[in-house]
Length: 234
Image (tube, rainbow, N blue to C red; front, side, top):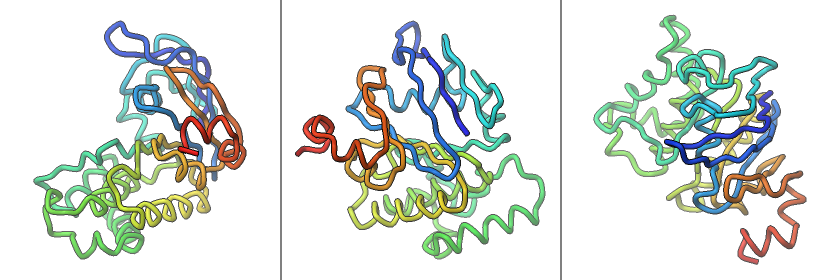
């Protein structure tokens, strides 16, 4: 579904990614774990075109999307849940969701998608008229995911979906991600909570200093002594 090959990218002359390669498959959850500053967020931003790579190639569904315009990326089926949620605090829950469907001009389809989101996250229906700023951290994360889903993505990128959430809410969020996987969506997430990420993911990548240093089935990485000592606190 998504293939990243030898990507070099960074900010204002500072290279962050040093020729990384990874894949995200349809109907699977792939995760990137590693310390702060490893390049995890930069990877997601480069996929969606927020950062233009200096070298390498990114393919989505067999199509070269290297350096794609982010708006065009959403139109072809890629959506992102950014770190820190980044909802619009002054807009209501319903208005935030509608922003996610900016590329859809069919009112019936938009209503149908809204109904799906509200069934998936009933709390958003109850909060639909409340400003985004008044929602709890968990509610805002559900809203951020719902907003991304409004574009009917084939591939969902998630940046630190568990950040700042209580364990019970983390479990609820990841159960929803598993549901998306079972429905055939591909998911690529970066997550500092390596234990949770690897428990739920199918494929895992360990990133350090802009390089992929380990890769494999998530269950294998979870049991790897080096990974346990470096990232799982074992």
